[in-house]
Structure formats: C-alpha cells, structure tokens
Image (cartoon, one colour):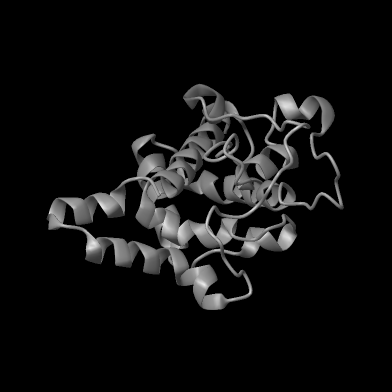
Amino acid sequence: WIYGYICWEFSSWVQHFTCHRIRFWWCLHSPHHAPSEINLAVNWIHFIGEFYYTAFIHVITLTLLRVNPLMLLPIMAIDSAWGIFVHVSEQTLKRGKLRILQHLLITPAHHRVHHAKNPLYIDTNFATVLPVWDWVFGTLQPFKEEVKTEYGITRDLDVTNFSDLYFGELLLLIRDVNNADGIRNKLLYIVMPP
C-alpha cells in the first residue's frame, strides 16, 4: 500500500508538472488556476478534457510501476479528499500551515503557493498529499509570510467570462501556432512551456 501510494503520488506529480510545462496541457489546466482567490469551489473548476489526459498518465505510469489496479480506488479517495481540503480558503483557515504536519504533508499553505502567480511561486508544489516528489525534483516552495500572495494566471482574465476562462488560453495557443513560421515552430508552441 505504501509503495502503491508513493507511485500514485509520482504519477500525480508527473501529470501536474506536465500540465504546467507543456503549453497544450496548460491550456486545459489553466481554468483551475484562473480564480483570483482560493476556496473549495476552485477544486471543481477544470476543463472537461483534462480528465482524460490525467487518467492516461496515471494508467500508464502505474501500470509500468506494477501497482495493483484494485488499490486505485482507495488511493484515489484519499487523494481526492485531501485535494479538496487543500483548497480551503484563507478566511476558513488563515495560515493553512498545520504546524508540524507542514513538514510531512502538502498543506493548504503549500497549495496556495501553487495557485499563486507571484514569480517566486510559479510552477512549484505539484504534489497533492506527500511533498516527497516536489522535494526530490526541487519544486517544493514553502509559503513566505513576507510575500503577499496573488492568485490567478499571469494574463488579464475575466473569470466571469466563460469563453475566456475555459478557452482563452487555447485560443491564444491557436493564434500563436497560426502565426508561427514553419512546422517546427508551430509544434514548439504546442509542447514548450507556456
């Protein structure tokens, strides 16, 4: 079970990291990062196509690591429950560090860092429950009291505009691909970081 959960966390880290580092996947993941504040509702904001990519990465990774498929439902339940909890608002849980647990688990403070658009915080804290893979790959970033956290994505966006929220990044990618010279540059726009 421990091996299975660590493997699940690895596949989650890989999936989440690639959502931030491959522009096409970022287009599908960006609605989750668009809101300018964090609360439990943010956990449910996802582009519909993101589920398929996520499932594909998990199935491939866990199959290669020989994790028993029967273990996935309990593991996913733990992961989902904790994933909801880490989106708790600052009004509900002000600091969100959880004392000693902040050294063992991803806390709401860690996940607030992940959702921030501050340069120090961008592309950090990809783990859901255990920070082990963020630590191993150098993407763990603690919350800094002196940094005023700004949530959202780095471009101006009206989160009340459904089209811009869900399709804005995709439309910008399409524009960049159409304007790029040569097939190589077009492909690079799709696979390079946003």
